[in-house]
Picture 1: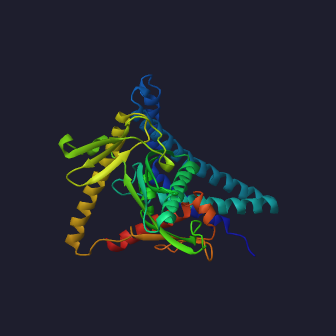
Picture 2: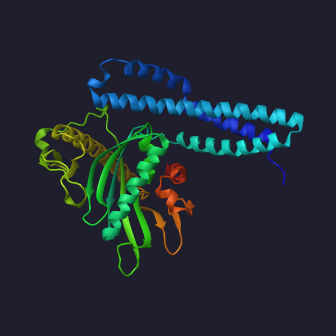
Length: 371
């Protein structure tokens, strides 16, 4: 079988990478990195821990993004040299190595190209993710816990920071709900395609008769609010309740009433946080979650107004979107894009980039079709 036409393939990759560089703009990113490095070196940086985490997280994310682009450019240049020398010397081993590197580069550049499709209003923000168990009883609670671990493992694989704000444990196994942040640039734009209903089909480990069980869990993804959002929440609009934090099985993990639940009276939105050490910290974290929920409500209200004007009813891409089948066969399939893999264990261990990339491309195509 004939090998690839390297001259054409290298030219295509160079054009694709130039397009990516034009969007990401490494030069401007380097200037921003230099400014953030000055902030990080300030001796009083950690006097404000929340700001310090924001600055260091943004610095790390920008540095990783620039390093990723520069690494791909360096690899592409090296590949061109390898191909030239291999062809001049008729070195079959070098050409085989070049072909392997070409395939790897095509995959890596295609993955980074997806990043250039994130141009929504809040896409570059950090993400606030909530997972809730839905229909399916204890299996649904267990499924929600599996999804929580999946996303945390995905973030860990990419070197993204995470912070779990609140976990509500189910009585027998798993969780009722959990809320956490992913601290990385474009985390919201990236993870927003994960929003919707996820379905698990398996032989239930909680059924004594070993019957097949279908259970559901919901994933909500919101952009983290920033100071510039200016969402004013009067104290008269909220009710704050305090209670003792608890862990699995109802065991107390705190001997004081440090956990905080905030109810936004005008909208009925309820948020809680129990993972910080003090009531003050938990209230601050809960307020950040409430800010994000209110920001998203404002966005949805605007979209509803626009959809009403268009008379198209809006889109429904956020409904049931993925099936995880463990029995009678093994497969994870995205119901919107038809992207699928036959290794659920790897998916539950955080290998979901293929689903995310195909989801972002699908969403972009859907947006262009309806614009």
